[in-house]
Length: 265
Image (tube, rainbow, N blue to C red; front, side):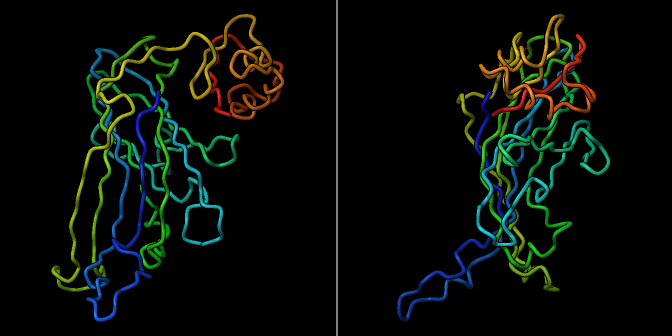
């Protein structure tokens, strides 16, 4: 189910090459740099745990500008489920997993929200491991987010309160010694959801659906699963490549009860 669009930035407020009229004020002196991240709050209003998969889609810039994102490795992603931030380096629940098809423009993250708990997912430029981004200030990426209930959930249906936001931190000069010269400020605003509502109703699909997880049934083969999902059984290798760690070395052998992910073409 579509949730919202997003825009992740590390850019000046005004373009660096803005043209000024003769005798006009130099508005570059008014400009600060903004670090803008995407924050998605998910509240599990059910009395049972819910496992969800989020799919992020980004069309990465095709030019060779070094600072522009080339893959999801250029992003910080984190999940706060129980009051503690989880990062990809120390917890697999916070890891964005790029999909193979199309190349590098889709990634998923799967995690469990405890009953009546609220989680927060964060996506922003990775200026921590790439501090040069703070100097070049030329990072921007846009895309959209989808969410699916996972077949690993304890129920085939669930309700979630979904609140997408963009949050920006502004600064003038991070190397300044006086706080007033740093020019630090923040802003946050809600994004409209695709449905116009905040309460989302999810139903677990009983057939293999692109972008969602699927429980292998008795009599299934990857060919038959691909035929149901894509209308073309010959695309079974797309599913196999995304689930090698679950299926094992032989794509002809799948076991009922295995939970696999059906990539989006």
